[in-house]
Image 1 (tube, rainbow, N blue to C red):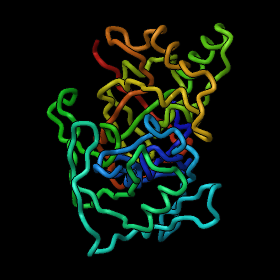
Image 2 (cartoon, rainbow, N blue to C red):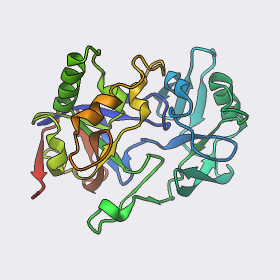
Image 3 (tube, one colour):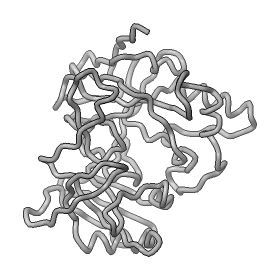
Image 4 (cartoon, rainbow, N blue to C red):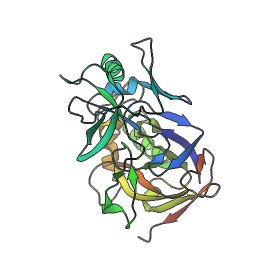
Length: 285
């Protein structure tokens, strides 16, 4: 088996960046979900509420995060090094409350201009502080300590090319068009093995770098996977969410599942590369 894709999403729910290589940190791949959009109540905003977030292009230079949108000529540039005097605020992600750095009024005006207000609320851009820790839920860990940034709940999302092929085959049987892997916003995509076999993987190891990731919880999917990750539109509003649920890809679990949530176990600061060969340790049951 080997890695076929590496992706990061520097701003939660905006467009991702596909990479040839990425560095593993304690919070996942470097720069992944390091920023987030919040409303006036400091609550996180995603494509679930604002599908047009998929239209914002994201780039990284050696010095800055750069956001672009067709509605405006000028991109938004945010320095990678935060200002020491930048205000801090408490933000909410589901039931979690954590500290964030406010990226200021210029970023707020730019986001609200290109995306519009969310109801009566404006939009702001916040950054996860380097020194902060947001613990991953312990329920599915094995006594391990793990943390993440602004991701929904886990540090890394792993998906399988074989599983996507199986899903698209079932969609074709129903007269539906195929969906690309981008719908699922994974960090690491793996080729090899059989469809949905990843639900039996306990961990994966990269031979070249010594990286080891523990797969700890199936990823339950929401309506974002029905939305095109360029336009934000839903070509077939219930798909592939409906078909995934029908396929029962995670037996014994209620809902639609695709991919596995993972945590770093070894190899922090090492590089992962597309084409890297990996091996798998399977669960006993």
